[in-house]
Image (tube, rainbow, N blue to C red; front, side, top):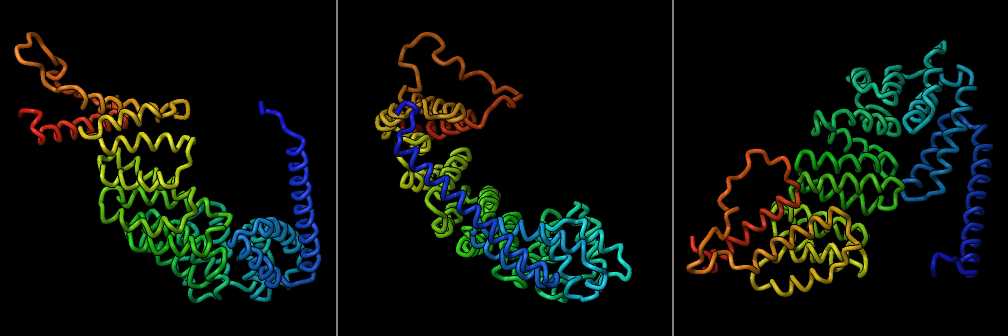
Amino acid sequence: MNGCIWPSQVRRLTRIASAAAAIVGAVVVFADQAMANQATKEPFEMVRALQSAQEQVASGNDSAAAMQRALLTKMDEIFLQLPPEAWQDPRNARASVIHLLSGGNPEVVRHLLTLTPAPVIDLNLMEASLAYVEGREEDMLTRLADVDPLNLPPSLGGHIALVKAVPYIQTDPVRAMELLQIASLLMPGTLVEEAALRREVLVAGLVGDIERFRTLSIRYLRRYRDSVYSGDFRRRFAIALDTLGFVEDQDKFDLLYGVLEEFEEDSRRGLYMRLARSALLGGNLQIASKATDQAQMLAVAGTAEYELLKIYQVATRLNREAVKPNRDLLWTVNKAALTPVDLDFLYAVNIVLNSIRHFPNPPDNFIGAFNSGGTLETPAEREWLTADMELAELLLRRTETMLAHAGDVKK
């Protein structure tokens, strides 16, 4: 096609653009109509509408995400214009905190804290919420020290439990887990539960609780796989894979199959490739082989991943019996599809493969130093080693051991 766009493609793109414009227009009109209706309602009623939109966001509705932003903007305006008497209703005062923790403008709460009489709510909740959105976590925890989220109305308690858990994730993961569970308990099916589950997966990885990690991951994927924030979950999940040692223990690795089946094929393939590479770099060839096999079943021919998996396959079976098929497979790798890092990996595997093909000892009656480099001492400083060089070194040692057991190397 040489970069040209055919008339049929132009028509198709025009239809897509028209449809997109129509959707955006519909969202704007719907948001305007909704805002006109909200303007006559009490703050706590507007927050209910906001939370309804957020539930749709959690289920993956992109239009609801636009609606949520429009609602928050309109609520910012209305809340700042309401008379002080409006905030004497405890429901409205609580709504101001929920609005702030849902992404509302902090200026609203700053304004409410100047009113006389003050809003009918524990002002520590307002001050703490303001401290949270401004990044003053220590101040927030101090103000919430005696606040039990379970003693608050669920719609507020869930938010407070969620934000209170955040500073504890690194300092006290067990406490963080307790608070995140409370947040999920108080507000099931909402964006609060979705956010709590995402964080719980990370915390489970930090504390090494594999069973909780599996359970929470499956729960999240079955309830919120289409959430607009699911990309963050996938990032946290991948981090936990590294910290929980799934590539170091065969039994642990086997526990992953059920969890990874919950992911769509593209994500599952990427995760298995990540596991395969980590296992290779760690020298766990049996696990690397299993992960590679799973990824290959999902790989698409002609892609960079497909080419890289050929190298992984060779790296997991570097032995005498597989020398020829390994060589033939490596010759089919399309180097143009590989990144510089992947090319280094290919080079390391080639070095090991060639070392197997050559006889390790000099022939009888050979005069001279056949392998003088083998008598050199290991350098004291090894910072120059890359991960792929270390892998090559590890695989060479394993190959030597296998050959020794086969009787081809005399010790």
